[in-house]
Image (cartoon, rainbow, N blue to C red; front, top):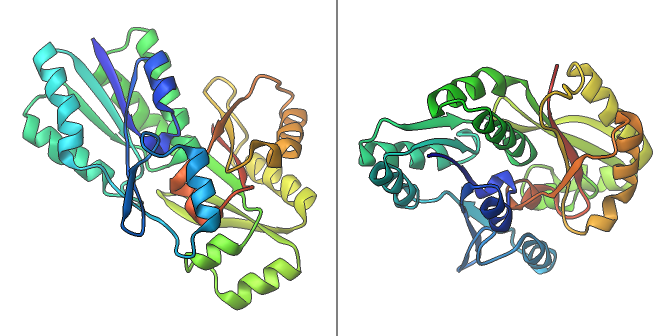
Length: 279
């Protein structure tokens, strides 16, 4: 048996994981002294409800090595193999926890992949791993293929409000005020494993156009690989983006997912984005 293990920042729900034979190890969300297991004891919808009312931004912490070790020991007992695909090591200690757990387990048939991406990009890598498993590749072959292809994974996300970038200290109060008055819509990306501002645009339609340009500058979307669009908070807030992307990509069957806390804490509700493999 071959297990695919990822973490909750892949935005794969526990219900989806059960349907698709995936294992999702949750990160921990902390609202002050209250701690929740991402996607287990707090849903994505509940997270954004709490985010909208809290004065101090929540934080997240990686799973402990023991949380990975439970699954690794099971693989060892079964004599099965596993591919473990985690959030970028530059954004979290999740990959390090998995590495420690592998050392503790002392089992060679566990293969770790540092995705160097997050959320929609990590989701694309996990879906690709699932396709490779269906094709009959071994865990070692899947891990090698993911290492080869992960540099082509791109994410662009449009931020609707500057409030949360200011709260998180990524934008000064004066820059946030000026940006709000000018109706500036930043577009962020995960590049080389970290979150950066890719571009800024005036107004929502200008931002949609700019995001399309950024996708083209990244050599476009390779339709042979998984690609997804995502949103934070209320799905109804991003209907226009959904329509715009479908019209420009000429595809009607795009997977749409709720973006979780990893990126959501920085951008707040109303953000929308796309994750894909570039050509």
